[in-house]
Length: 90
Image (cartoon, rainbow, N blue to C red):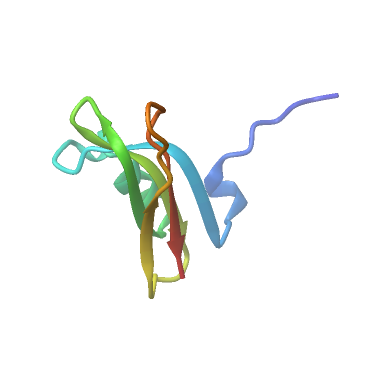
């Protein structure tokens, strides 16, 4: 069996949801994963910060062919555990 890596761009997905994404908005585009992926895939992006990572936003991102009408981040964190969150995007 031959394994072939598939890149997000090749999939041409209408909607992509990713976890553990870093957004450093004042950095170079390649250091801001949200902006970089949105630009590379030509998709709208919505970031849901769960926590900070080395001073940058860290959390989940939704990339979509269509602009968002509604975006809401919900905190699912539990005391004494790593921060968790979920985001609704319509």
